[in-house]
Image (cartoon, rainbow, N blue to C red; front, side, top):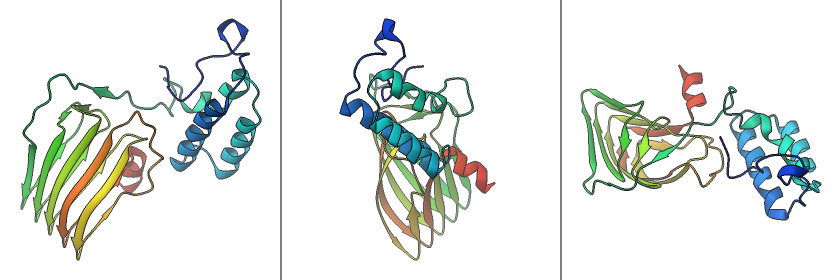
Amino acid sequence: MSNPLEPTDVGPAVGGDRAATDPDRDRVVTLLTAAQAEGRLSVAERDERIAAARAADTFDDLVPLTRDLISPTGPAARPVLSYDESHPVEEADQIIAIFAGANRKHTWRVRKHTSVLAVFGGVELDLTEATFEAHELTFNVFCMFGGLEITVPPGTEVINQIGAIFGGSDVGKLAPPDGVAPRIVLKGFCAFGGVDVRHPKDRRHRH
């Protein structure tokens, strides 16, 4: 599985001896920073690798710095994101939990616009295996004595525009956006309720 932020391979036969440019170094630094934020590198390991990336002369110098972080078969593998923008549905998806719970997970389709209503109930949305109708997704949220939990793929950008009274919204400690994962805009209102956005690893640690 290729990653747009990492040089593809090493060795002169595939251009590994090509001179590294500042943008090449910056992409590697972005990956290292994201890995540390996700808990896959310590601060000391991140700083050591960033120093090596800044000093790199060729692709052969850069690739080993991130290879263990993006292995397609290892435990640190990133989810494969799927986009299908060919047949978007214009009307918003409706997810309602009133004195009850609702959840979406596994291989469900996330529309460009989703409305979430939680009143004395809770909604859980897991986007890690979903197919997305667009790169930018909007969630319109209303929570009253209820809550919404969203699990997002690493690298997801979250724009939080939710207002709250005796409630709140928490996007957690997310990794820096990578430009590949979705961009999520949260809009709406919470009263005596809350919205939590987390990575899959954060969700596992809380249960």
